Length: 328
Ligand code: F6P
Image (cartoon, rainbow, N blue to C red):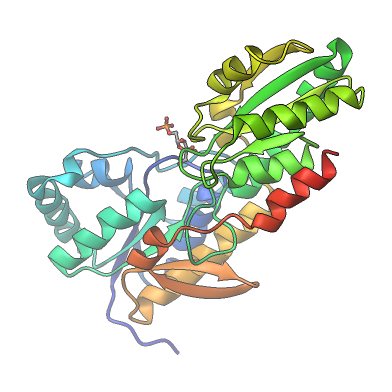
């Protein structure tokens, strides 16, 4: 029997949405009900917290959402929450509803805001890593990453068909402002000739050498996957730099964009959201605060917010080497 003092938990989603957030919301709500705790949903993240856009959740509030992409609670990036006035108003709204524990689903910006809020107003917060970027320390996978890479991979496969039909070189831009995980894994799985990520210095000469080697080998089409945050620029910029020096192929650019963020969550993301939701409620009830719930080696782990956001996951150099070997 779990002993706890928390009476009412509120859950919210913040920052970029990601597939699987609905599964996590559902798990939080049903888990609170299971433990006899009141549960609320805050709309539009910190924005809704400031505006008092807070709704009581029942079991049927989360019916028929596990299979949907996006977030039923909606999401936002909040400038007002950066102000003391905004945070004080948010706290008053929580007090009015008797909310004494929070579950924040989002990425590093969400957890940094939550940490500051928790310290200022002494309210416990537990986080669920929800971002397609997979760039949080303390979990093997973030919620939405698996769905996003499979969506991007499906698009890359389709582009490969047309690239091959026309003997073209394609630069495909995938999401990832600060992280190259989507580019790395979709590039390997999509058979890309080269992958450009923000974590490593991009060398255009080296890229040229790879492309020339492919051309000499009589490759009829080639694909380069570029993470949007690569320091040489996005796919258009990299394509422009290459075009000046390489006229053996007709070059095209495709930016996949927000297609990668939507769509129904994969089985893995639904299970991940369900596990993280239940574990986060149990963590709050067990007295944990300011930690992110994650899964490492299939076990639930808790990582302090400041560690989760500051220690970025590293790209494994062996994975990049793989691209070099396989594109030969
Ligand atoms: O953090 C997730 C993410 O999808 C990034 O990969 C991307 O750079 C960013 O969000 C885009 O944000 P927005 O939808 O606000 O333009």
